[in-house]
Image (cartoon, rainbow, N blue to C red; front, side, top):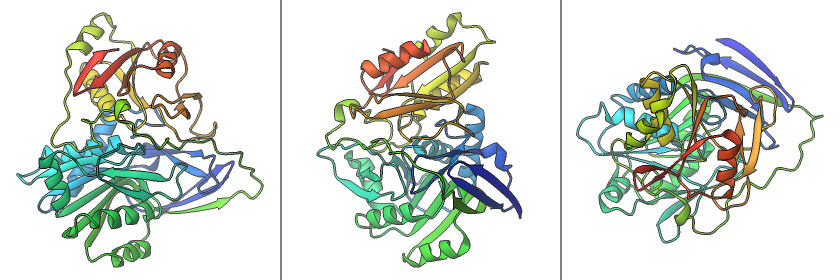
Length: 384
């Protein structure tokens, strides 16, 4: 077991690494968080969130984790991606799995911080988060709802697992609507939950609970007693219905099978691009998987592409966070959102793929990045 130490302004992070098919540096870097509940963040290189990610490397991780699931899922299943950061990771793993799955019914859905009135939901908490309230919606579409309420296997997907407490809260909430659940598989890129804690989690449920990850380690964070946290900015969504601001066909209310988009508009846009140009495809908040699919398509056509998304998590500059843009969110919450590790002029072409109607904050971001914007609605992409 190898060791790794990271010094951050907020404290010292110590890792004891188990054997893995991946090097730690392939998977993550590190940042300090403006959050005294947890002063560190693993900055995943494969999430398209805080770090500009290569679509091919993300695709490889999706398939690696999906193949690790082979043989563990029995019967119908619900895959849940954990918003904000891992909504796209969850959908990527799900799509990779259903490409190789048998005839059993499999559903993907991701959690959300946004309220949709009039739809049955499960509420649960992520205590350490900067915005702790989450919703998991019961799909209103009858076919999807039947799978959701009767699945034999629950697959929970996040980028990293530190204590498992959030998943415990979610499993308890889900069991209230599906008491016949038989097994839970907890999937992550990084797993820091040791064997003792894993057993404690298993003992809370009369279920088969498994843990799958790309890399496992023991983690210990020693806070810096001299570090003074400034006030955490308000990053909580307003408790009003966001229906008019959200795409309802990309994951929050459940999807079955592959998510597709029409490439015609994208092909037209790229006709005059040069192959040596660097491209960034940018999603917003929880809406990242469509941006990944667009970036993956462009990458397969021969462009040098990165994919990323805006975020509400307030990280400190330094370490893995070299650049930080701040702007008002595009979901009508009037809270700060951020774009990390991107500078004006860094890319030759920037595409912003958004689910919200065009608004002032999006217009300003488009202008700042000299970007082209695509609006995704009802499964279709159009220039906005």
